[in-house]
Length: 191
Image 1: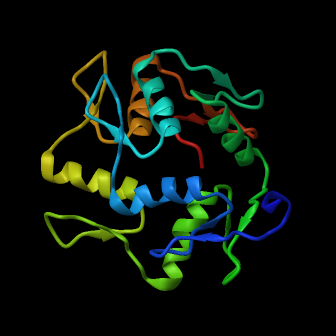
Image 2: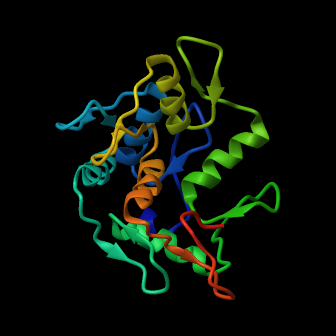
Image 3: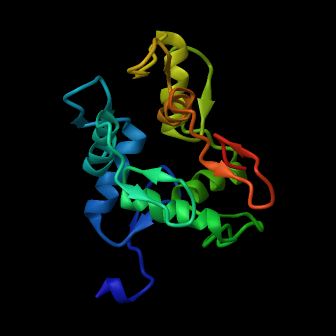
């Protein structure tokens, strides 16, 4: 009955990750080996988990499914909408036990923990670049290959981040989804 205790008997030998089930540890180990068995059938992207692949495949679809009832945010996953909802509150449920840093995502906290150790486990095989996340390394690799996997269907704009493409699309629609609650100002970026 490990699910009802705080015991996490399975420990990663390469980082601080611990978990209850061995299957979760096996899945976690893929981030250290950079093995990505789940490949997108429509582009060159590959992922460590089936869930990541499923979320990625939605980038090939024009429709967005999840609308925020408080603003103009539109997302492709329910999890993304739940994550977005935290931007409307000051809630940051994930807190570092070594400092007073807090954040809205477990993965962001795990990456933050690396700042305390100085560890940069993701290393470029072509230069001296090293970083704390596989996503940062993947984006860095585009500098070597020149690849820009996210392409606009209306013009020849291409970029390395899906969020950048989503913001670019506002240039075609004229939409400014982030509005000031005190005046008429509106823009395409939050914050």
